[in-house]
Length: 330
Image (cartoon, rainbow, N blue to C red; front, side, top):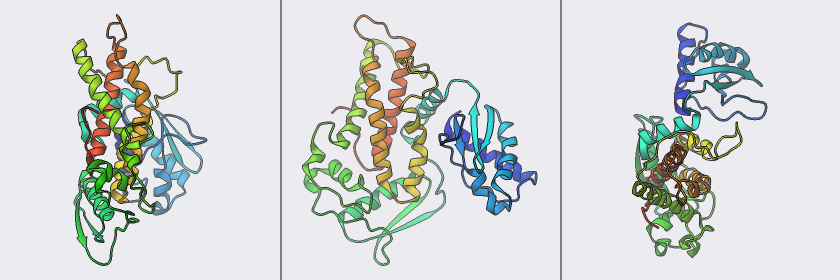
């Protein structure tokens, strides 16, 4: 079960509790699941009971206990534990494994993995000043809003609703991709750097790391094809300690949440920084993907390739939403 599937499962539990009359509250539009925090347990945790407690007129622990019964009854759930003031900590039944399920979902959705309907039917009006950074940020926000089912209208006039700190100079000499990254990667309240550092083809350049990771994945796919094998989700067999998730698991699982937040908060910088997190978690995996010497391709090689390709799809899709090219070769 993927995080998106679990989120829908918990939301369905809320709706069932409302339907039976155990909770008197309007179900939320969505439910966020994350890794358990300090004092938590299991595979995932959610604070939905705390969110619903006040509108339901019940203590958070009571709401959590009601929801626990319904979540526990759902397919694929092994255990649900209530901790702290009312967090639901959920343990999944062993099946493919969480990471394998994520890879399968990303392969099915491709570069549209993480797109959703959080803004379905909504029109977002962005009023921006006549300034290059504001224009670029508004364009990226419009792309993100569309990816969440909404529509953005960009206007110039008062009152301004989107005013990031202006660029200190014209970013055009950096070229379209580096210029956009220079303007989008910093948070809106931070002053962007318009320097040649954004063109350096080395690991000190965040944009280079993101695009290089994607280009390496595309090269690995071509090389694997030449060797006669393709990616297939499964056991990575990387020798990691049991119970420790792969470094890519959390950033891949987080991608839909990041896209929603970037769209609803008008913050493309969140997506830019997230892509860097994905790239940095992906790069150490890449040397292990292809067989070495006389080694024959194994199921582990196919699984590693599938994972790398899934991460590459996230990078390509994210860069596209920022209006930046994801090259096949670099």
